[in-house]
Image (cartoon, rainbow, N blue to C red):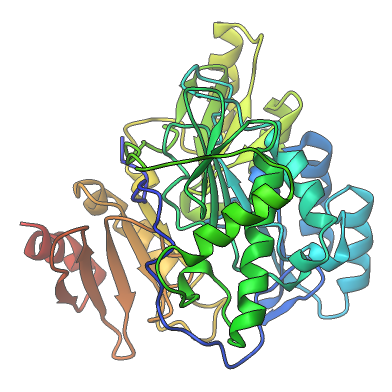
Length: 429
């Protein structure tokens, strides 16, 4: 089983990179469609990846009626519909609104929340973060300042296991064994009851800091402030709002958690979606197996809660998902392979990276690090943490880079995907 593509230490807010965005945030949404080579694209935010079965059915129907019929999972547990007609925006918005997937048109692109997908299901949660999701989402949608967040700003709700705490979130809550949570930025403990509100206040404090700086930045890591200043402002804001907090003298690193393995995990079924691409039939099978909800993961998988289902029924349901082409075998190499959309969907891509990734999945499975294939240097959707970047170049080849924390990046060219095993050996030996 591969480790999560992340480094699970809480990120210090002082590690800022000098960035100023000289253009508006063009991140697509459900109301702002993106023009791609295969048609318009809509990105529907799904906080925590949690969809009711009814909402999932609505998305599947919309993909078939308005798009190419497929559903694409993102690295933040959101859903993209592709191949949409340019004039379908009004109809799509009405469909999503009726299903409760657009609670606030003014906030729809900023509802980026990842959460531990197995929280409350496998006995490993220090605190079940599932109840935090609706509270944070409601507070976010009711906040005027939150409208100014970019579509790339990210919240993370980690149940203490360390699976989403290191996904590069701008605001993170990590459950602690005393029943509370650690908030970053701020480096403070807050109560479980106050946690969602505290996370929103941290985001609003960031918005205020951006206004004062006069710079256009989208992420906390881009905000150049002296060390500790943003954290101190967050603490003052919490105090002003009557939220009790306990300052931390030291933030202990969180163990790097493994992503949900395919198969039966506690009171859930876990299925990996190869390259995040779901056919209409695969999506329907997931909704048939699910009791009340689906949880989409940031690693392009789906967790289906099945509490109360017997062992035989779980095995039968898992077999149905496998028969539909989803990955349910924990020994499969697929969870360690990812890719952007590539050609022909993206005009900037130099290669059909999905096809090349699929053709070489066995060779990738022999590598201890996960691989991510990108059609160009933008590396859209690439994961955090230790990995192998496989980036297509304009000359028709690829360049591989072994990215490992604390070690120099090693690179190697690859003229043909058939040479993947040799190229991997050259940079990982």
